[in-house]
Length: 133
Length: 176
Image 1 (cartoon, rainbow over the protein chains, first blue to last red):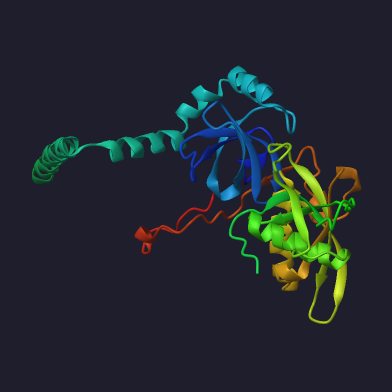
Image 2: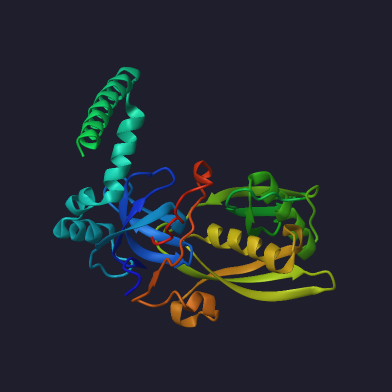
């Protein structure tokens, strides 16, 4: 199949825009071609989101269409969605980006110094190898 | 003129002509969809004046309550009966929308009427709005969502353009 991620009941989504940015939920129902009914843990609850606010993950759970919040949460717990999500690149990248934005000036300075030092080491090693070859 | 930047609100307005003495006056109730209370009251008198011999000057509003959504997380199919004035005449319509609330569906209706028929809000009258069972819906756009195993990919997904990368070495991937 060319497409592996579908908009379907039970698909776990990562919210990339809006008030709940960074959180994830499960598609419980579809309002129309552009809106989803998403449900998730306490952080996001049950709400309607636009398709473009959402990024699809590879995780899919088995839930009946339009089921109650309790059913969704137990299904999420049973399938271990939280652990699977933490392993997805979407979540990891968002966390890394967030962490970088939270850095203070001193932390940024430390990073810069470390990067300069490592780059210097890499360049000197490459130069040595070039000279020897 | 109504401005509708956000979702409309549903008001239940009850009014009556002012009593001239001790006589009992008839009481009229209307459901009005409007962006705020002021417009709602105005539309109430507009419609009541058309239907009954009572004007704002000779009448009073007994009660106005804003109706809240009964089930804001349950998706429903709404059938909306509309009367609107086109450039050359007045027409009745039956339109269907899928939404989570009555106000959401009516807002969709106003936007849709403006888009498809260039109908301005002042020329649209909402006659009736009802929740319609999936089996009784008529429009294919609505019926296509009534599939318990509904599933579609997002082919060639173009997300908001990042102006930082106008010129890039490789073509961006549109695979979701």
